[in-house]
Structures are given as structure tokens and as C-alpha cells.
Amino acid sequence: MKHKRMKGNKGMGDKSILEEGLYERVIDKELGSSLDKLRGMIYKDAPIDSEEASIILSKYIQEIVEKGLDNIKEKKGKEKRRGLRGQINLINKIIDIIEGETGESYFSNMKIDSRSKQLLALYNMENSIFALDKKKEIPRPETSIAQSSLFTGAIHEPQMYNEFKKEIFSCDKIDMLVSFIKWSGLRLIRDELLSFTQKGGELRVITTTYMGATDARAIEELRALPNTEIRVSYDTKSTRLHAKAYIFHRKTGYTTAYVGSSNLSNAAISSGLEWNIKVTKKDLPETIKKIEATFDSYWNSADFVEYSKGDSSRLLRALNAEKNITGDNQHFFQFNIEPYPFQQEILDRLQAEREIRGYYKNLVVAATGTGKTVVSALDYKRFRREQGNSPTRLLFVAHRKEILEQSILCFRGVLKDPNFGELFVGSYEPLGIEHLFISIQTLNSREMIAKTSPDFYDYIVVDEFHHAAASSYKELLSYYRRM
Image 1 (cartoon, helix red, strand yellow):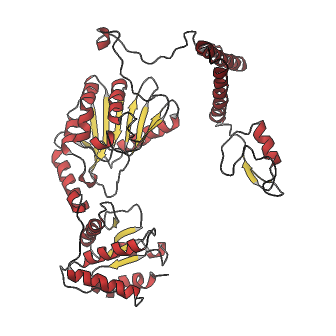
Image 2: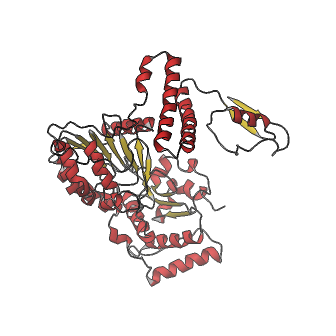
Image 3: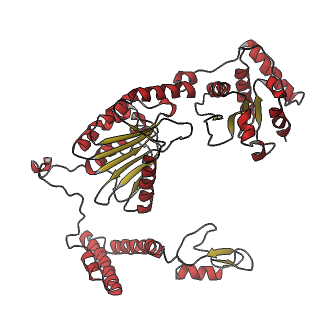
């Protein structure tokens, strides 16, 4: 790998085909000439990797061939068939060259047939509806199974569940990986899944009890399907699955996978503004291979437990426990939480201490049950609003898990954000530390102070402050400060 610095005044030389930035571009004659003329700029190149050369060079030649075919099409465009024949002749000539260079005669069989057609489907007529009506339309997705595409939920796009129906009809095996499954979503494709599995198709489903969002009825409906296996993650504290993927395997080599934001719910796969990439094996084989391998690793992981007949009680208990712990009661986030007059007085005094006196370490003393946590959440809400675009990082410290679980619920309710904050206590492991509800024991045992800067947190709450006299709080209280 080489770094080359071109001396002279910046801006001199031929830059007509170059922009500053990153590249992974094969250096052709035109580009090489431009690089030789550059002045006042640095560029980095590297030899083409011999192990990756077939991939790199094939993508490079694809661009050239595509431009050449378009050129032939434009020059002979008045006669459509003639233009197509010219394009096919070019491809066949390229194949002749490859055959000559490799000495392998089988390349000759890859020449495009004189029919100039594409094969779109192949089915056995025996024991098939097609035996009754040879002209019957063969269902196939509206989007290509050879070229990747993006779904955004736009009006002009086909709805995902309609694409799923057609994908199910034409595939040999299905893998689904979703955080939760709603009956409203499953019912849209249930008949197709039933027909698919009854004909011997294999269906594997991985899901979770996260936030209690899954419908137990949907899981039971899936379990009742033949040739269907289900794995469930019950421990959503250490295994937080947010991935969503629907993989339609085909023996023909035209495997497709939908990866993005849609769980299996009506809104997510019908009218919701969800973004999903449809990945095809034909144009992104390595990506499909990674998707398949990752799914299999989850499938064989001890984190995901087989769901079978008789497990419905365990599932219901887990879903109900998640709803209670995470506070996934939607009505809780539909109303504004307003302070009582005595709480508003505390809030006003806190603001005055900061803005008028410049005191940023304040003690709130109130009787048990008067809502000190609500006061801290409301004060944080106002403080965050005043910071504008600042991340307003929060550290909430308490000595018991139960207090932290209740406190994070309170903050989520006040902020009307069911996803705000993360717990770091006991079996709870956070993905980030920006808005953290942590026990003093975990803070010390995980050496949080040594791993954060003194000014990292913008707002710190120490609950049950009478415990702060203990030595375990000493470093916490002396370390963090306002810069």
C-alpha cells in the first residue's frame, strides 16, 4: 500500500474526474493519467488483492459492459430487436474471448440462446394446479429476486405482506427473525404459511418476549403449523434482540431476505413507514451467506429456547413479567404527568438555585411517598429542554434494583418515551451509558468512574441520599463535576 504526496499548489492539475474523498476504484488509464497530474494533494493506492481479484475485476468490467450495451442500444434503438441482437452478440463475443483465454469449452454453453428470453419459473405439473390450467399465472414477487431493492412503505411500492405471500409460494424454506410477533401481522400471511408447511416446506422462527409485545396467540398459531420450529428468548435483559429478517431460501439459487425495521405486525408489513432492504443472493451472495450464518448461530444458541406444546404458560408468564417490568402499558405514555403544587414549588426552587445562585448540587428533602422521583424526572425534563441539542446525559444512582426499576418507569412516563434509559444492576446489562440507572454496587464493582470523564454526565440523581454517608458513595460524590 502506498501513500503519494504531490507537491505544488493545491488546485493545479487535471481534477475533472476526481473529487476528494474515499474510493475503491480500479485505476484505468484515464484515472492513472489524472493522478499523475495532481498537485498539492495526497492519495493512497494499493495493489489489487489476488484473492479478491475476481470480485473486484468482475464488478469493474460489469460497469464497462453495461455502458457498452447501452451504447449499442442507443445506436440501434430505432429497431428494438436489432438493438437487442447487437447487445447479445457483444456478450457472446466476450464469452468467446473467455473460452479462448481459459481453454475451457464449457464456457461456450453459456452463450445466450437465439430465443433471447429469460426463464422466470419452472414447476412440475403433476399434482399441481397448473395441470388444470396451463395458462394460470404463476405467482412471483413484484420486485426482482435477482436484484436487491429498498422498501420504504411508500404508496407506489408493493406492500410487504403481499410480497411475502408470493415469496412464500415460490421458496423451499423460510427463516424468520423478529423481536415480536403480533396476531394482526401473522394473520395476513397465515394461509400461505399453512399451505407452504403442509406441502413439506420448512419454517423456522426466532422471537422474544421483549417488552411483552408478542401475542401468545400468534406463537400458538405458528406452533400448530406442520414442519414448523420456534425458538424464544425469555431472558431479554442479557439477550436484547432487535433484528428483523425474513429469509426465503430457494434451491434455484435465488434466495432473498428482507432485513430492516419491520416486526411481524399489521402496521409494520402493510401501511407503516418502515424501511427494509430486500437482499438477493444473485447480487449480494456474501451478505446472504452472513445472514444465513448469523441466523443459524442464533438458532443453535442457548439463549433461544425451543417452544413446544405445553410451553404456553411459561410464555404468558414471561410476557406479563415483561409488561410489568418494562412498563409497556401504552396508556402510561399517553398522558402528560403534571406536578402537584408542592412539587412545582420544589421545581421552581431548584431552577432558582441553579440560575440565580449558581448552585448545581442540590438536596431535595420530602416525606416518603410525596414523589421525589417524579420531581427529579420533571426537573430533568425541563433541564434537557433547556439544553437544546445537547445529549443531556443522565446518571441515576440507587442502592436497590427495585428502586431503579421503578425510577426508570417514572422517567419514561414523564418523558413519554418507553425506550428512555437503561438499567445496570443485577442481570440487566446496558447497550450504552448515556442515560443510565445504576446501583451503587454496580457502579463501584464495574469501575464506572474510572471509565468516564468527570464531566461526562450532565445530570446526576442520587436516590435515598441518606445512604450517601457510606464510603461506597465517597468517590461518586467527589469525582463528577460541572465543567
